[in-house]
Length: 177
Image 1 (cartoon, rainbow, N blue to C red):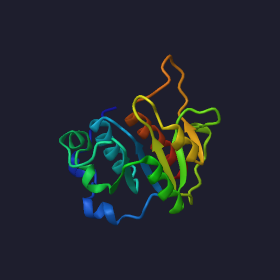
Image 2 (image 1 turned 90 degrees about the vertical axis):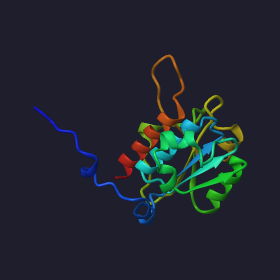
Image 3 (image 1 turned 45 degrees about the vertical axis):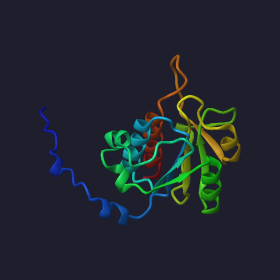
Image 4 (image 1 turned 30 degrees about the vertical axis):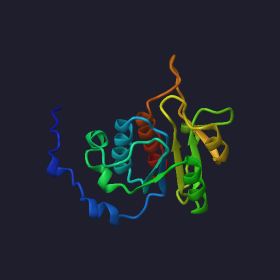
């Protein structure tokens, strides 16, 4: 069997303005002190791919405009709305007031396994992803409605934040249809 890759013009990509006019997905990504601008750029690109409503860039997270963000975002920093918060707790509390269920993507004593979690299609979720070294801050975990864990079976028990974003967003979109 032979197969031909699609050309860029065959992919049906939409423009930034068209993207921003689409209905919301009910998903917001909260980046809790993500040090690497490349990881932030990857978050923008993944958020665009899964049509997240916005990114909340918190604390020391890199902010656009940035050449390093742009390098991995490939322009998604222009399509995905974003806000900056000095403190992640401020973002989480505001999102809760707006009706989002707050979910820390973290390994905790009572975390739910990603494959066993069924997202409610009518519920809006704010997904909190943590710092490359320390994960999601404990006080942010404490403010969350629950924690969601990506099961891991090797000798390492952590994933790069950009990998975690892709896995969680794919699983939630797959489950929500």
